[in-house]
Length: 111
Image 1: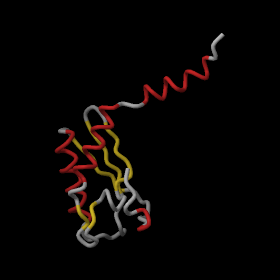
Image 2 (image 1 turned 30 degrees about the vertical axis):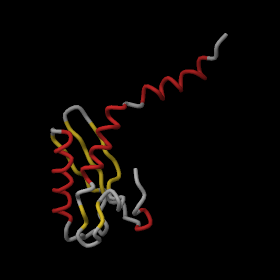
Image 3 (image 1 turned 90 degrees about the horizontal axis):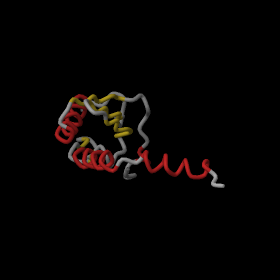
Image 4 (image 1 turned 60 degrees about the horizontal axis):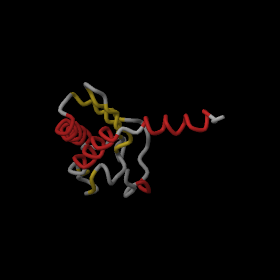
């Protein structure tokens, strides 16, 4: 007799990984490397400002933070993030700013 509970999580885990979706996420991250924080001189991926990429069939949402709550370049950086992601997914992109505080120790950590 086989133990179904032991095999079910593995099949669910395998079904949860979508290689096409992951390739799109990686392409988005590559595109976002061109968005540089002008005060720090590093891109938003290196700075760990991109917190989540939510891919949908008709829209994509990028959840991000800023290095400071009153970043003077916020509008420009958000517009650049939206533009770069739209160049990859070719549909509407929403950029959501999170209230999470940026920690410089996270900079350099990659996805």
